[in-house]
Image 1 (tube, rainbow, N blue to C red):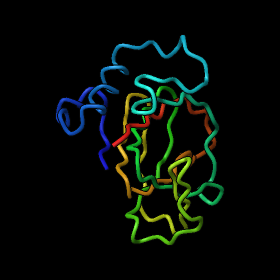
Image 2: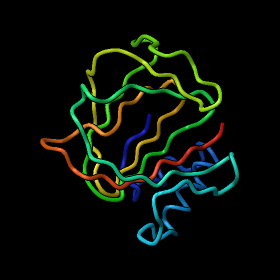
Image 3: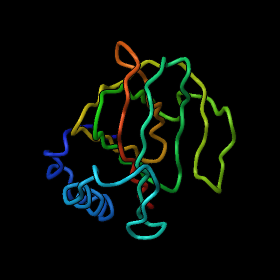
Image 4: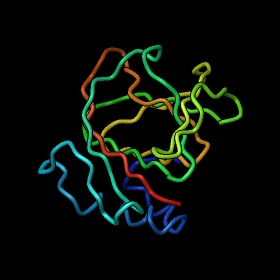
Amino acid sequence: MIIDKISNYELYEGINKRLDQAIEYIRNTDFEKLRINTYKVDGDELYFNLMEYETKKAEERFWESHNRYIDLHYILEGTEFIGYEQFERLSVKENYNEADDYWIMDGSLHSKVCLQKGDFMICFPNDVHMTAIKVNEPKKIRKIVFKVKI
């Protein structure tokens, strides 16, 4: 898992060529002109979901993990907590969904990070994460989540 500001991405460049491609796309795209949707950059190899939602209490959220894709979360507007945990420290709540590449996990929230506009978080397979957790009070979030095929 990597958490940082987009302006510091050079520190991580070269880890994965598709991640580099996603960052380049972020740097060169005006997301204000795009609507909520899924956008293909390189077919199923690299795409992103542009989403908006309101943050909630952690008890109303769920843990997820992936197998075939790396998630790159990038905050466009708002502030949210994202919980994180190692896969082996949680239990499987729903078996792996091959078609949509996710596990739903169960367990306590012990660690979280606060992301705000301009921050990114890279979740590698087995980096279990819980998104959309409110900071103080519910807030609207606008963000993109790149799906980067391994």
